[in-house]
Image (cartoon, rainbow, N blue to C red; front, side, top):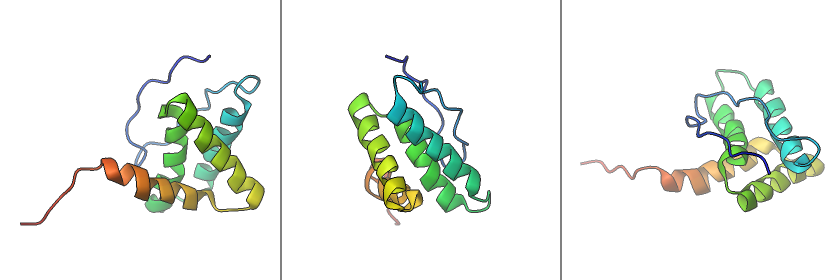
Length: 108
């Protein structure tokens, strides 16, 4: 089992780090993270929304516990098999998971 990755800054302005998953014994994670890196590289720097969605998936693969990582990896791989947009999957996680963890702000 690989050593846990050190915590990293939030994905909105941090490029994904290199792939640290092992291609032989962590194949689904390695392949899914490689797809995240490829997707991130195709998005223009000024498209910050889609960059955040793309990076969200990669950071989830790095930071979630094992069971969660496996689910996200499978969802990423299924996007490619179905020809779906990975950024839509990233958007789903941002809107339904990440946003729940953000502080609630009210206007006075």
